[in-house]
Image 1 (cartoon, rainbow, N blue to C red):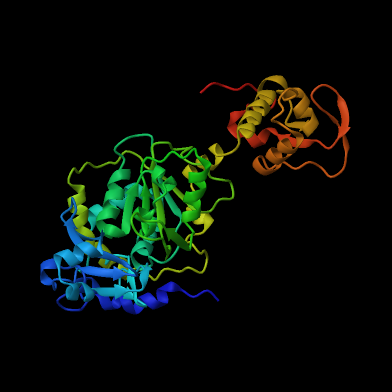
Image 2: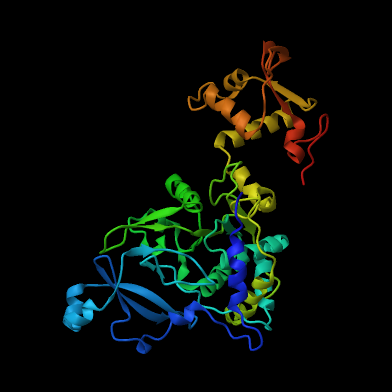
Length: 437
């Protein structure tokens, strides 16, 4: 029986908010504090044979973020005493254990590269602008979007579908949503160009819980497959500069944005890892929306904590294929089909509209199609034609041979039944005329 990961969260979520004065008690407070409040060597760590310093920098939103910087032992000895360097906290290795509720910096003598969650839930506030941006992104699938956000916050160790935000129009909220996620999840999220995934050094995203790829158009198969693999990958070998390689648990969720609504990436018909949302022009304008969203985070987190516990018994990525289905995903899958599918589709439609306008069904074998349209094209083999007709069109040839009329004459064979109704409004009714719209 599959265990519900929320079983362990129920006590955690309830334990984050105290009643009455609504004060919050989070492990974050034990870690993210001004370095001046620490002992002289407390900001340094040793992992294996390598030394690092934890520094703190404010981001563009005024939130102080911890970062890990490599330091050389000889420089530390030069700056401090040998005794002080020997006092630096030692860890056996790096690890990643995502937890936004009960954070632990040290796990099994390993240094946790997952950063403390930088916000605290608080009851009593409003989250009206947060609701607006979520409605803008998730539209009629708002409830699914809310559960998606709940899972990011409460269940960072679980798998989620690849969220792809698309629109040909500018200023629809794609970048705003990514910036909001960055404010919300801090250093546990990175925003990259997809080309980063093909680089030798991967430490920039190897520890991340959310990897956002901006303005994505993937035509290279290796990057395309890497994105799909990362969405369900269990571990990653980190290849950092200046230090030795190490293996980490991997829990990243993928978010992409693109101006290409239909062909930003090849998505197969049976693919269930994508949640595609087409964004329209927003009905509101707020140039200070990120400030509003940041101010609403405590109230929104409190709201997420009041929602019913998430159920993972129907799908390992929380949502079923039926829940993720929408017109945008259907369009991407349609455009992801092979060039031969799209060419044959045009040829079949032309046959119905112009050459055989009174027929409801075309009866054609693979040999008929090859000889009529591709006799001089060596790329189009009988095997390739069968594959496209069966897997991409969904056509089935009869088991037994029959007498039929092909392109020019009566024949014996096992023809595919190609129905006029398959093409919907793209072909005119039998015996009728296609009216230009």
